Structures are given as C-alpha cells and as structure tokens.
Length: 176
Image (cartoon, rainbow, N blue to C red; front, side):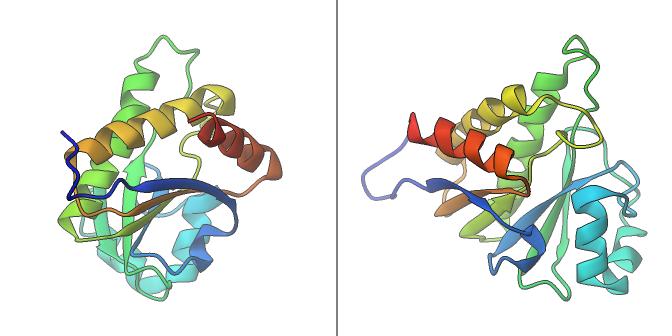
C-alpha cells in the first residue's frame, strides 16, 4: 500500500536511443539465450561492449517472462536488466501475463539493485510481433502495479525508438 512518506514514482515516455540514457538501469528486450540479437538487444550489446556478452554467457539464458541483471559496462546506465518478452501468437498463448511478468520482474530486480531510474524499451513489439496498441497499456499498468510493491524507484521511462510508439505512450500516460 502506498503511504505518504514514499513519493509516487513518475512514469514518462520519451523518444530516444535507450543506450544513451544516463539512468540507473535500462531494460533489454532480450531473447532466451541472452547472447544478443537484433533490434534493441543488438544495440545494447554493441554499445555495452564485449564484456556484456562474456557475462551473459555465464547466466544460462532466461525464461520468457523472467529477467536477469548485469552491469552496464560501457553504457551510461549502471545496470542492464535483461528480460525475455513473449512472441505474439494471437493473444491466446498467455502473452499478456508473460509480458506483464517482464515488467514486474524487471522492476523487482531494479529495486533490489537500488535503482531510482529505470528505462524500458517497447518489449515484444518489434520482431516478436506484439501489437503496440495492446502492449503499451499493459506495460504502463504492469509498471504501476509493480511500483506499489517495490519501493525506491523514482522514475520509470518508456523509451520509444519510433515516433508512433512515443505518441502512443504519451497519450496513454496523459490519460492517467
């Protein structure tokens, strides 16, 4: 339960390259191997450097809906939280629960790491095909729910690569 002594975290959207953000933790939309891939995952691995891949090789992968944390290496972010979103299969394969779990588990790891600022990409909406208009409200609501449980996080950023995603998140956040 929220109490007056703990300020509410701010949720906000921005259009940016997540690898450039000077935050405590960025979230990587990873694949189950955690060994890099396309999209934001590849960009994070390239920007963080070879040390990230070396550490990820020791993590034994990650299940869909779960997350693991590493150092940020060459990124301005202190930590990278690697989470594996679901592949969209029409909405009948538990995708919503798995995507919500990505946000919850990522914020749990961020709180454990004493992160005050966390930036999320649009998990599962790229090559994994999750429709952004379904993923965005779920992302926002999942983050709000998780923040009731995990204290210390002051700001959650929904870092959108495309203008369309940014406008979608900005509109939803403005609605409260």
